[in-house]
Length: 213
Image 1 (cartoon, rainbow, N blue to C red):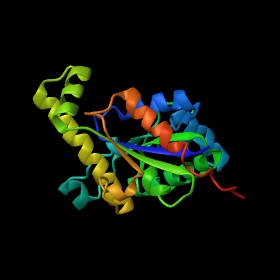
Image 2: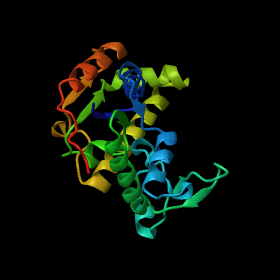
Image 3: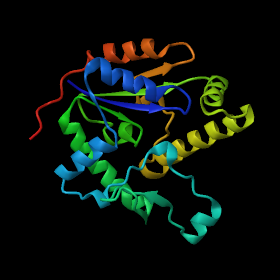
Image 4: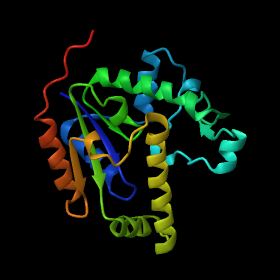
């Protein structure tokens, strides 16, 4: 049928909506297990796969940029515990190649990871952004993670800043640019089920993916 990319603000319930959409449509989630499967199809080994999610990307500070300090990235290995020093810039082409290979599978939901930028001009893709008012998101994170309001607000700001920096740094796009998306949903006004129904209805209006050679 189609591929769905979901970009979400932290605390907007985007992950829950993505899981719900997968269940309704019978789609696969672009998770670590699927990444490993698709990576093997494009000739990558487990040790080469980096699950570089946008909202866990670390915004590089002044000293990092000055000294060129690469971030610590957890990679998959045969022991599932190997930690390597990987330059984030080097990891992006790997993530892009896996996303593009997954696109050929069809019937997949890709959450984060710059999917809306990688597949921006590809047919048969629905790009969705999940948002909510800041205070709503902070309260959700506060309750879910057992944090004070102030700490929850800091966590939300940090994760949002990381996602925005990821898209700006690696794809030169504004994470919040409405033109990147077909559908923007405010979960301050829509429930998880209601938002899921909106996405399902929208994806059913897409033209099917053209045959890929």
